[in-house]
Image 1: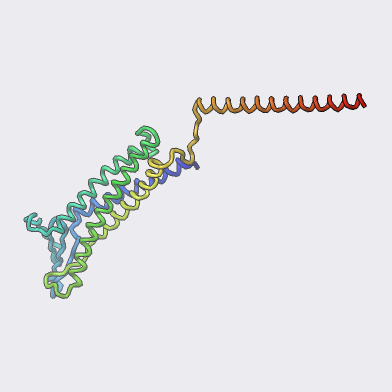
Image 2 (image 1 turned 120 degrees about the horizontal axis):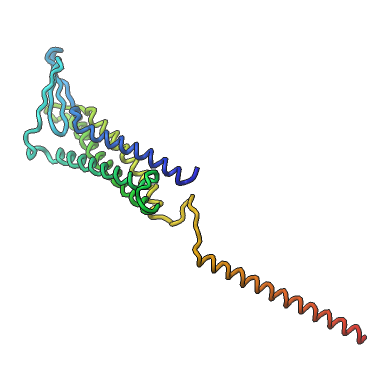
Length: 248
């Protein structure tokens, strides 16, 4: 199996991983349970409070739930706005990263040369990587905020716990970071590294053929001249010895 085939299979696997991570990050937006808390004195009056970045919900023991959107955007804290912006940026970057990777992968054969496709794939991998980092920062900050409020003994308001939406976001962010990092390493090495890669054959130009032929001809002529000179010197030495023997 050649180097190009191995890289092609790795790119396909990374694409599946990144698309799965992008879907998981997108699925956290309609997920209502980012934080949850259970309050009640008896079973029939138990209430569950849960919320996400966009709305707050409550449900009772009968299973009836009621959700209410956040009425004012300007009344929210800056950290909620930051988490919203980072997750939306992550979703957009991962979407365009999927398009770039589909164009630049070796199995699609849509782009131009191998080096151009590698640059396009590298751009898509960087989109995945940056998008995954943005989402990881948002989910980690939100989860750490819930943990710090829960562990703070001076916090007198309702305390919440980390919900399933944050855990799904952590998983999707990890997939995006992993796939984007592998894309960036493989495609960056091919796009910005040496022009000679394993699995590719270098074809010399006509000038190289001509120069090599001239070198061989010159070497042959020099060897013939040296052999003629050696033969002439041998004959002259033999003649001198014969002449000296005759006089003796």
